[in-house]
Image (cartoon, rainbow over all chains, first blue to last red; front, top):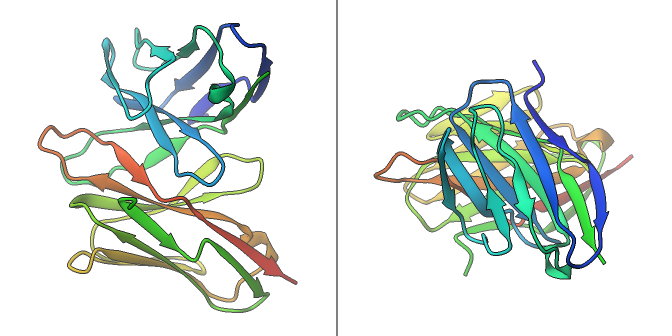
Length: 115
Length: 112
């Protein structure tokens, strides 16, 4: 059982380039999330999805796009990379439960540097 | 003011010491998570709790919903416990979504 898999682990982009961070989970989780982690800051939510075909903005969505065509995959797209997007990105997933007994599972992170 | 505050921000201790990391939050929550992040590594969920106390090995997590406070304790600390420990709360929502709000983390270093 692989859990949440993110690729790539590291990437250096030039300003203005585009790229897609891949995230896939094999736990049949409805909920998936993209966070960014900046030094000295808590993780900030970029986008999330509550199921295939449904996405919504988080706290810091500007400069990013997402899609959720399948339950398993939730790619994050950077169209015009900017230095402010230098960060560590984490994908996560969970299964919704009204009883609040829902673990969150995280990928290993993608360290992105924009130069 | 952040919705989730952790203390201390940094903690260095000798091997074997009892460790306490605190988390206070200001919003209504349905659950609180304690997460562990090793240098260069991913994030692992240690505990999820909505009341009382949970124990796993040398780790103990407690939560007081009325006081909006949680603690993570490590007994007989070991150098391999060195990591960043992150508190995250799942805010209570009428729509059933699962958004988490994170603290900035506590960097723990255990010296042999």
